[in-house]
Length: 98
Image (cartoon, rainbow, N blue to C red; front, top):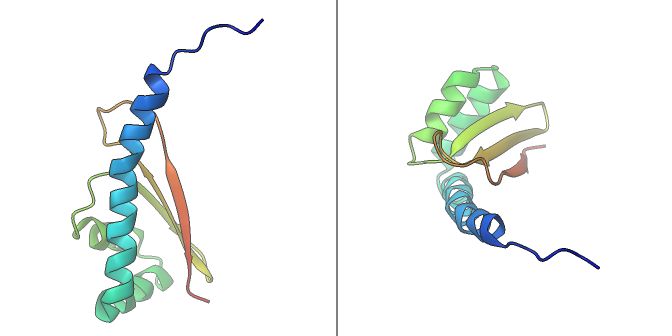
């Protein structure tokens, strides 16, 4: 009734998301444990300094592609595989600051 499944892409996606989850953990750990870093990040975001926010986050060793947006209440971070890698997965998380 149903076709046979091919788990190849599915398992590759699961492996790739592990790298992305590691980067998300690196970001959250840095913000949680480094008040100076967190303050600088928020200040740059509140001043709409998109490139500076991106550079600051990349400076902690993030390997994933990163898209960032923010509003008065949150920062939205979307991580996906590096350029040149298969676009197999994506992780978006929000951190609230209000």
